[in-house]
View 1: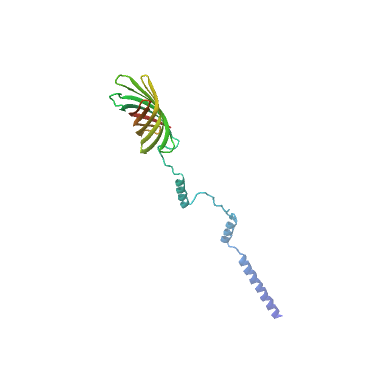
View 2: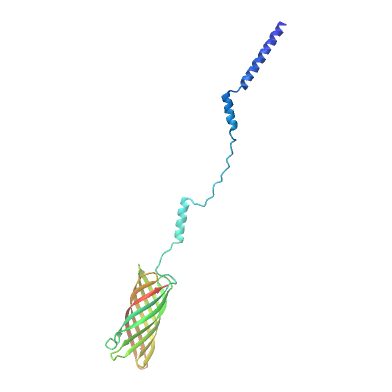
Length: 235
Protein backbone atom coordinates (compact mmCIF):
# COMPACT_ATOMS: atom_id res chain seq x y z
CA UNK A 1 0.00 0.00 0.00
CA UNK A 2 2.78 2.29 0.80
CA UNK A 3 4.52 1.51 -2.50
CA UNK A 4 1.31 2.17 -4.45
CA UNK A 5 0.97 5.56 -2.79
CA UNK A 6 4.55 6.42 -3.74
CA UNK A 7 3.92 5.45 -7.40
CA UNK A 8 0.77 7.53 -7.59
CA UNK A 9 2.64 10.47 -6.09
CA UNK A 10 5.45 10.14 -8.61
CA UNK A 11 2.95 9.87 -11.46
CA UNK A 12 1.21 13.04 -10.34
CA UNK A 13 4.52 14.86 -10.13
CA UNK A 14 5.42 13.74 -13.66
CA UNK A 15 2.09 14.91 -15.01
CA UNK A 16 2.49 18.24 -13.29
CA UNK A 17 5.94 18.77 -14.75
CA UNK A 18 4.62 17.92 -18.26
CA UNK A 19 1.77 20.35 -17.96
CA UNK A 20 4.14 23.03 -16.71
CA UNK A 21 6.49 22.58 -19.67
CA UNK A 22 3.63 22.68 -22.18
CA UNK A 23 2.26 25.83 -20.61
CA UNK A 24 5.69 27.41 -20.73
CA UNK A 25 6.06 26.55 -24.39
CA UNK A 26 2.66 28.05 -25.22
CA UNK A 27 3.34 31.21 -23.23
CA UNK A 28 3.94 34.29 -25.55
CA UNK A 29 5.76 37.32 -24.29
CA UNK A 30 4.30 40.77 -25.03
CA UNK A 31 7.15 41.62 -27.45
CA UNK A 32 6.63 38.40 -29.41
CA UNK A 33 2.91 39.12 -29.47
CA UNK A 34 3.54 42.59 -31.03
CA UNK A 35 5.90 41.13 -33.68
CA UNK A 36 3.38 38.48 -34.61
CA UNK A 37 0.66 41.13 -34.87
CA UNK A 38 2.82 43.26 -37.24
CA UNK A 39 3.53 40.25 -39.41
CA UNK A 40 -0.18 39.46 -39.53
CA UNK A 41 -1.02 43.05 -40.55
CA UNK A 42 1.43 43.10 -43.49
CA UNK A 43 -0.26 42.44 -46.87
CA UNK A 44 0.75 39.26 -48.58
CA UNK A 45 3.52 39.73 -51.16
CA UNK A 46 2.30 40.20 -54.72
CA UNK A 47 3.96 38.05 -57.32
CA UNK A 48 5.74 40.21 -59.88
CA UNK A 49 4.50 39.77 -63.38
CA UNK A 50 7.10 38.95 -65.92
CA UNK A 51 7.59 42.00 -68.16
CA UNK A 52 8.27 40.93 -71.73
CA UNK A 53 11.29 42.45 -73.31
CA UNK A 54 10.42 45.13 -75.82
CA UNK A 55 11.02 44.12 -79.37
CA UNK A 56 13.05 46.71 -81.16
CA UNK A 57 14.35 47.03 -84.63
CA UNK A 58 17.36 49.04 -83.54
CA UNK A 59 20.39 47.32 -85.04
CA UNK A 60 23.52 46.75 -83.12
CA UNK A 61 26.26 49.30 -83.51
CA UNK A 62 28.23 47.21 -85.97
CA UNK A 63 25.12 46.40 -87.98
CA UNK A 64 24.21 50.10 -88.13
CA UNK A 65 27.59 51.06 -89.50
CA UNK A 66 27.65 48.31 -92.08
CA UNK A 67 24.09 49.04 -93.22
CA UNK A 68 24.85 52.75 -93.51
CA UNK A 69 27.95 52.06 -95.56
CA UNK A 70 26.01 49.77 -97.85
CA UNK A 71 23.32 52.41 -98.30
CA UNK A 72 25.88 55.05 -99.17
CA UNK A 73 27.48 52.75 -101.70
CA UNK A 74 24.14 51.95 -103.33
CA UNK A 75 22.71 55.47 -103.22
CA UNK A 76 25.84 57.54 -103.79
CA UNK A 77 24.95 60.60 -105.84
CA UNK A 78 27.53 62.43 -107.89
CA UNK A 79 26.52 65.91 -108.99
CA UNK A 80 27.19 66.75 -112.64
CA UNK A 81 26.59 70.11 -114.23
CA UNK A 82 24.81 68.48 -117.18
CA UNK A 83 23.11 65.09 -117.29
CA UNK A 84 21.19 62.99 -119.77
CA UNK A 85 18.00 64.76 -120.85
CA UNK A 86 19.16 68.28 -119.92
CA UNK A 87 18.48 70.91 -122.58
CA UNK A 88 19.31 74.50 -123.36
CA UNK A 89 18.30 77.26 -125.73
CA UNK A 90 21.00 79.65 -126.88
CA UNK A 91 20.92 83.17 -128.29
CA UNK A 92 24.07 84.66 -129.78
CA UNK A 93 25.30 87.81 -131.44
CA UNK A 94 28.44 87.63 -133.60
CA UNK A 95 30.79 89.75 -135.61
CA UNK A 96 31.44 88.17 -139.03
CA UNK A 97 34.89 88.54 -140.52
CA UNK A 98 35.30 87.36 -144.14
CA UNK A 99 38.45 85.32 -144.73
CA UNK A 100 37.68 84.30 -148.29
CA UNK A 101 36.98 86.56 -150.07
CA UNK A 102 39.19 88.90 -148.11
CA UNK A 103 38.00 92.09 -146.46
CA UNK A 104 39.14 94.05 -149.52
CA UNK A 105 36.02 92.77 -151.27
CA UNK A 106 33.61 92.04 -148.44
CA UNK A 107 33.40 94.16 -145.31
CA UNK A 108 32.99 92.99 -141.74
CA UNK A 109 29.37 92.24 -140.90
CA UNK A 110 27.24 90.75 -138.17
CA UNK A 111 24.91 87.83 -137.44
CA UNK A 112 22.49 86.47 -134.88
CA UNK A 113 21.81 82.86 -133.89
CA UNK A 114 19.01 81.00 -132.16
CA UNK A 115 19.67 77.36 -131.29
CA UNK A 116 18.64 74.35 -129.23
CA UNK A 117 20.65 71.42 -127.79
CA UNK A 118 19.77 68.30 -125.80
CA UNK A 119 22.26 66.19 -123.84
CA UNK A 120 22.46 62.47 -124.56
CA UNK A 121 24.83 62.09 -121.59
CA UNK A 122 26.80 64.44 -119.37
CA UNK A 123 29.15 65.48 -122.21
CA UNK A 124 27.53 64.85 -125.59
CA UNK A 125 24.58 66.76 -127.04
CA UNK A 126 22.81 67.16 -130.36
CA UNK A 127 20.55 69.87 -131.70
CA UNK A 128 20.46 72.59 -134.30
CA UNK A 129 20.29 76.30 -134.92
CA UNK A 130 19.27 78.97 -137.39
CA UNK A 131 21.22 82.13 -138.10
CA UNK A 132 20.96 85.31 -140.08
CA UNK A 133 24.12 87.06 -141.32
CA UNK A 134 24.72 90.13 -143.40
CA UNK A 135 27.77 91.92 -144.81
CA UNK A 136 28.31 94.79 -147.21
CA UNK A 137 30.59 94.97 -150.23
CA UNK A 138 32.85 97.77 -151.39
CA UNK A 139 30.07 98.90 -153.69
CA UNK A 140 27.75 99.16 -150.66
CA UNK A 141 25.72 96.19 -151.76
CA UNK A 142 24.48 93.71 -149.18
CA UNK A 143 25.26 90.02 -148.97
CA UNK A 144 22.89 87.98 -146.77
CA UNK A 145 23.10 84.40 -145.59
CA UNK A 146 20.63 82.27 -143.64
CA UNK A 147 22.30 79.03 -142.43
CA UNK A 148 20.18 76.16 -141.10
CA UNK A 149 22.26 73.46 -139.41
CA UNK A 150 22.07 70.36 -137.29
CA UNK A 151 24.85 70.18 -134.71
CA UNK A 152 26.72 67.75 -132.53
CA UNK A 153 28.50 69.05 -129.45
CA UNK A 154 31.03 67.58 -127.04
CA UNK A 155 31.44 69.63 -123.87
CA UNK A 156 33.83 69.16 -120.99
CA UNK A 157 33.70 71.14 -117.74
CA UNK A 158 36.05 72.51 -115.12
CA UNK A 159 34.37 73.74 -111.95
CA UNK A 160 31.80 76.27 -113.26
CA UNK A 161 33.40 76.63 -116.69
CA UNK A 162 32.15 74.77 -119.75
CA UNK A 163 34.07 74.25 -122.99
CA UNK A 164 31.84 73.17 -125.90
CA UNK A 165 33.32 71.88 -129.17
CA UNK A 166 30.65 71.83 -131.86
CA UNK A 167 30.40 70.76 -135.49
CA UNK A 168 27.42 71.78 -137.59
CA UNK A 169 26.33 70.81 -141.08
CA UNK A 170 23.39 71.97 -143.15
CA UNK A 171 22.31 74.32 -145.87
CA UNK A 172 22.55 78.08 -146.31
CA UNK A 173 20.37 80.43 -148.30
CA UNK A 174 22.73 83.03 -149.83
CA UNK A 175 21.67 86.19 -151.62
CA UNK A 176 23.62 88.94 -153.35
CA UNK A 177 21.82 91.48 -155.51
CA UNK A 178 19.63 89.40 -157.82
CA UNK A 179 21.61 86.20 -157.37
CA UNK A 180 20.41 83.53 -154.96
CA UNK A 181 22.03 80.27 -154.04
CA UNK A 182 21.30 77.42 -151.65
CA UNK A 183 24.32 75.36 -150.79
CA UNK A 184 26.22 73.33 -148.25
CA UNK A 185 27.56 74.89 -145.08
CA UNK A 186 29.89 73.30 -142.53
CA UNK A 187 30.76 75.05 -139.29
CA UNK A 188 33.20 73.95 -136.59
CA UNK A 189 33.22 76.14 -133.50
CA UNK A 190 34.64 76.39 -130.02
CA UNK A 191 33.36 78.22 -126.95
CA UNK A 192 34.06 79.07 -123.31
CA UNK A 193 31.10 79.51 -120.94
CA UNK A 194 30.65 80.33 -117.28
CA UNK A 195 27.73 78.66 -115.47
CA UNK A 196 26.31 81.64 -113.62
CA UNK A 197 23.42 79.61 -112.17
CA UNK A 198 21.71 76.26 -112.79
CA UNK A 199 19.52 78.04 -115.38
CA UNK A 200 21.94 80.38 -117.15
CA UNK A 201 25.42 80.29 -118.65
CA UNK A 202 27.21 83.05 -120.51
CA UNK A 203 30.24 82.91 -122.74
CA UNK A 204 32.08 83.63 -125.95
CA UNK A 205 32.50 81.49 -129.04
CA UNK A 206 34.38 81.45 -132.30
CA UNK A 207 33.39 79.58 -135.47
CA UNK A 208 34.26 79.17 -139.13
CA UNK A 209 31.45 79.12 -141.72
CA UNK A 210 32.68 77.15 -144.74
CA UNK A 211 30.36 77.57 -147.72
CA UNK A 212 31.33 75.90 -150.99
CA UNK A 213 29.50 76.90 -154.17
CA UNK A 214 29.33 74.92 -157.35
CA UNK A 215 27.95 76.28 -160.60
CA UNK A 216 28.10 75.16 -164.23
CA UNK A 217 30.83 77.67 -165.00
CA UNK A 218 32.92 77.69 -161.80
CA UNK A 219 33.25 76.69 -158.16
CA UNK A 220 33.90 78.85 -155.16
CA UNK A 221 34.74 78.20 -151.51
CA UNK A 222 33.81 80.95 -149.06
CA UNK A 223 35.04 81.11 -145.45
CA UNK A 224 33.59 83.54 -142.92
CA UNK A 225 34.80 83.57 -139.31
CA UNK A 226 32.41 84.74 -136.59
CA UNK A 227 33.29 85.79 -133.04
CA UNK A 228 30.56 86.56 -130.58
CA UNK A 229 28.88 86.26 -127.21
CA UNK A 230 26.14 83.79 -126.35
CA UNK A 231 23.65 83.33 -123.54
CA UNK A 232 22.26 79.85 -122.83
CA UNK A 233 19.12 79.05 -120.86
CA UNK A 234 19.25 75.55 -119.32
CA UNK A 235 16.19 73.50 -118.40
